[in-house]
Length: 444
Ligand code: XLS
Ligand code: NI
Ligand code: NI
Image: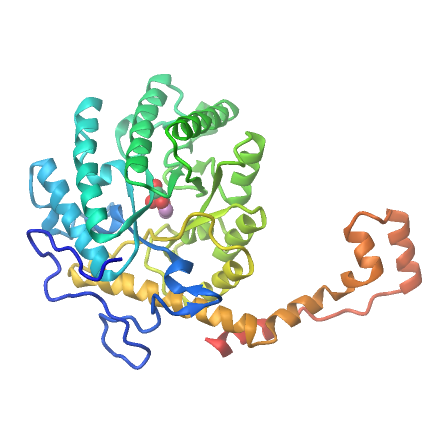
């Protein structure tokens, strides 16, 4: 990223400059204490491990509205009533924020960039205009697009789903929107393209032919992939699992479900997973479980960082700050091959009463520092602590000749059973869970 940052005609975040790294002794809340982007951990700079991205919809577009009350956030870049002017102001603010924060990527839904028009042609013209502007902004700042996507869930036409809608007319409209979002992503050099199945699911099985809808979803994904590949797109496609909300049952329930779906419909070559913390916990999994499931299938593409509320279980999209949870997640990341093509997108939003512009900085700085500290801790756990040794020791019996024969399929059930007779009753061995748990706190 270039050292100078872009400030549009207006400067939105006045009195805030480029966020510096000041180290652990600093008590400046607008500085990084752990995230020193060029410092090398586990063989590469922190910025390459994380590939942080700002989520356009939350960071620039949040209003603070909730089902009980109207907007509390009146961001100055949303003030213009003309949609073209508003989109340009929003983008000026976005690039000012992203470059001051020092994040290398951003992510968007099509109509986060500019308000949808009253028909497809108007929308296409608007997307053309704002993506030209984004191209200029990207070139001037060095900020890149981690992924693009299409919003196939907000407009009322999608209330019964998009690709899984029982009405082909809606499916066709979704195709028009996805084609346009793919074109925009490709034009902006996007590294990846995301499908989060917004309303791809059902509210009641009574009015739903589930098999038909899931077949349609797979067909739609094949079409989108074929189109993008024909346009020269070489990036990854990501599916973002989520078990519920907005529908009662989302088809992309969790990582294991999505992996089964990709396998069944022959999509494994092109699609990987974008794992989100709060979606994992909604599915009653831990975040690290979902990462491990994706990584074990060689399908860990990217991550949406946030956290839920552990008391009410909702998808509250709070900024990540739980060091213990993040350290466990970074242990998975470091012990597997890391992200394939993706990075860490802050799919997180401010609380409705966090109304100051600097709150956006505090939120992201805190999240980035928490990830940096977690990664540094996980790396030390792997290299300075007895963690790896102790974990491997639990499985050491499989290093024997018999263990290797078992693992490589060279042993019958009779031969395995015979070993029980030879070896006798096994002596129980402790799982040492508390020992493992304490180790993390010791290194944090
Ligand atoms: C919603 C999702 C959404 C996707 C992008 O819960 O997290 O924000 O990341 O469509
Ligand atoms: Ni989400
Ligand atoms: Ni998300």
